[in-house]
Image 1 (cartoon, helix red, strand yellow):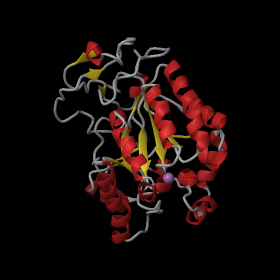
Image 2: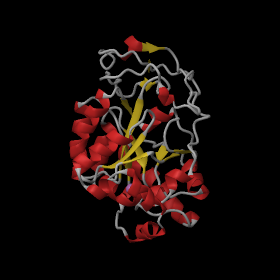
Image 3: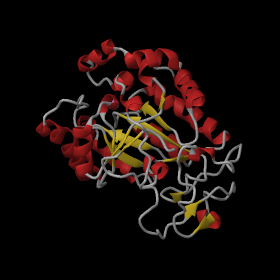
Image 4: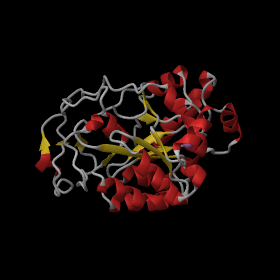
Amino acid sequence: MPSTPARVLRLTAAATSLVALASCASGLEQATPAAPVVPAAQPSSAPAPAPSPTPVVTPARSATAAASPAGTAKPGHSASAHPSAGPASASPAAPKGPVAQPAPGARVDCGALKCIALTFDDGPGKDTPKLLRTLTGEQVVATFFMQGVNVKAYPAIAKQVADTPGMEIGDHTTSHANLPGSSKEKLTREITNNHALLKQTTGREVKVFRPPYGARNASVDQVAGASGEAVVLWDVDTFDWKTRSASATRDAVRKGARPGSIVLMHDIHPSTVNAVPDIVRDLKADGYTLVTVSQLLGDPAPGKVYTRRG
Ligand code: NI
């Protein structure tokens, strides 16, 4: 849906009250003013602490980058295009037109490339494997913010996501709780325990956290940070939970995407999973490199809040 009603909804107290009523309420992610409240705390942390042996993919618009990232790589991590006021995004050199996608797990220089991160919340779900097939078929990666109840319901699918090269897993609490105002004990159950469950189920030490509804405060950030997790919100809300329409979801991404964007979707909705092939093709055609949120943000700092890059 277009942004105008969205903004109205964001601001309504009524919407916030709905949060408590929703069962999973993935859709109410946007009901709280989380994203606008927090200035994009951009990585003072951007420079990677140490050079990585992994090649950095830079904007050579090569058709062969996917197959051979080393061909377009340079050693170490380039922090030269550290984002500030002007979007990293601006990426003047960003090509228009399809670009080859980096190999899964490659270090990607999103200060120079036109990067975007697709994120899928609330799963895993029964359609998640179909989504994985789409993503791998298109040779792109994404980030999955999983809630514990569904990790327990679909442990093999959670593991399948983790075992798919390049995919990132994030913490989306144990039971999709609305966290602000919670006791320290509840925050531990929801955040810390889900971090442990994800490690146990998938083998991954997750580094990113997304609060349900985007609802957070300093206590939430602190508990996430203590688990080594950065707090990752979004700047493009597809309202896929609301429209349940593949075409509307696709349009929302097409209209909202900017270099450096983090896109919110939900893989528990078949309409969203059905929209992804077109979304990926649209973004590729517009010159985007699809990355995980950690790739986009460049090693996000635990406890810090991000809404996009730049
Ligand atoms: Ni959610």
